[in-house]
Length: 398
Image (cartoon, rainbow, N blue to C red; front, side, top):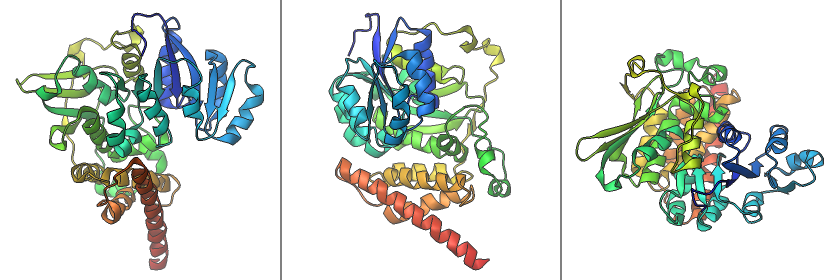
């Protein structure tokens, strides 16, 4: 861990080509005297990664996909070293001096590198939900010092910032906020006609396809509740979500004395990225990120109706059930969203796939990280079988 008073923080960024990675790099771009990007890593998007390499000139580049690495290799600067394959993230962490590692990837492939970073006492900023929902009970014990693990998602960052200087024992409840996605006012019949293009049109945030669909089903908010439980060691009874359509309020924390703290800001990932990277300081960001005067905020809140959004209800049920249920939820949702985007199932069938998979496998309780990852894979397999079976049944009925 580097002393916050030192001038330059040496960074590794895992997931450099995604939306969160782009926000992190924009902060680094604005404060070159504060941040030196030493490692850029991506899964397979070599075409987006290459211009970033020339802009930030890292010492190392890591690409999980070996074909992508083969494409980018001839065009890399001579002084940039390339790593590739499943272990490239872990190798990168051990080859250059670092102070801070940002995990802006999706999936579980980065979990070993995350554990390595924590064990090395490096500061970590995390926007990888799977790491905590699937492997939280094995990840959290590796935290070596307070604030070593810093949430990047805007909602969890809001809670984390509200809790600075506070004791976790003084919390009575926390609320995450949700914009509600594009279908908050849709009728059940309208929901059945939602297309992938409709679902990918989020009213506030610009994100990857999977997260955007999860935001439309509100599965994302349910998964974020589980993530908050892991991050802040809270039971489900103390974690909830509320609709705030403008996405100006990102989270609330209520305390035992009746006081409530909330974080209010523009819906821009650069704010939570800057809070995590520069902690405990705050960076002077551009004026366009400032909020207007408070009398123009016009804030209002709505109860989140789990009966209209079954994916949110299923996520809460998985959180309550504990054990392997959150793992099964993640695996089934991953397959269901992909099936929807590929035109294999309807939007409303996403919840059906998840519910069926939870009913079959949600009662299992893994005892090791390896068991958890195996359960995740079996959940994906079951969900694929369910999708194929439901499609065959529909053809038969037709």
